[in-house]
Length: 268
Image (cartoon, rainbow, N blue to C red; front, side):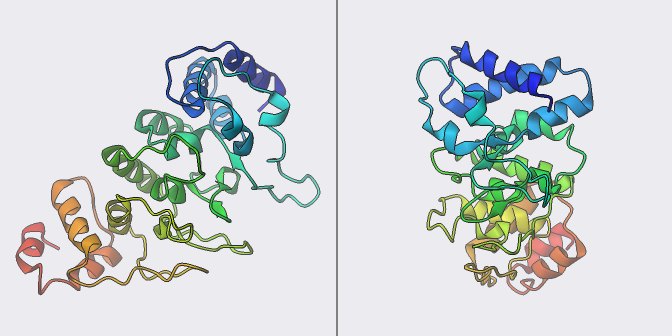
C-alpha cells in the first residue's frame, strides 16, 4: 500500500473515539471506513492485507482514543528485498484480525477483494509458526490478547466462507519451529478452546484431513463415537449448503454401521 494510505489510517485512528471493546475493534472500524472509500479492488486488497505489527497493537490500551505510531505499526513485518522472505514474527493484517475476532461481516467483505486466500503474503504469525487463514479461524485465541471471540455461529460461517474460496485446510509451513496443520486448533499451545471440536468438525466436512500430523500435533484419532464425528454429522444434517468432497464422504461412510439411518437419510 502506498505510504500515504498508511498515514491516513494512523491519522484516522489517532482521532477515533468509538464505542468498541478492543484496540482491534477500533482498528477494524477505521479500516472498514477506508475500505468503502477506496476506489479500486487493488487498493481495497492492499488495505486489508497490509502487514501490521501485532506485538505493537497488543501494547495499546483498549480504553480511550487509539493513538497509533505508524513507524511502530508497520515495522518488522516486511519482505526482505534481497531474499524475498517475509519476517513473520508478530505479523498480522486487517483481514487476519477480522477472522480471529470472529467478525463475520468484515471477513466476508474483505475476502471479496482477495484474489488468492492462500497467498503467502497473507500468512501471519501464529503459535511458533506462520498461520494461514484456516489456522486463524480454527485457533481464534491466537495471537494472545486479541479480542478472542467464541461466537461459534460466526466462526463456523467464516470456515464456510474460507472453504468456498479454496482455503488450504491442510496447510503446513515447513522450515519453522512448529509445523502443524489448522486442525491442531490450539493443541500445541495448550490453549485449545471449548468449541474446538465444533470448528474441527466443520473443517473436516470441507476436506481437512484428521489424520494429517505435524511436528507437535499427531492428528485426530477418530472413531465412530467420537465427539467430532457426532458434530460433523449434526452439522451436515443442519447445513444444506455443505457438499462434502468424495474424500470426506468416504471418511464419513466409514462410520456407516453406527450411523446407518442418518447416513441413508443424508444420502452419503
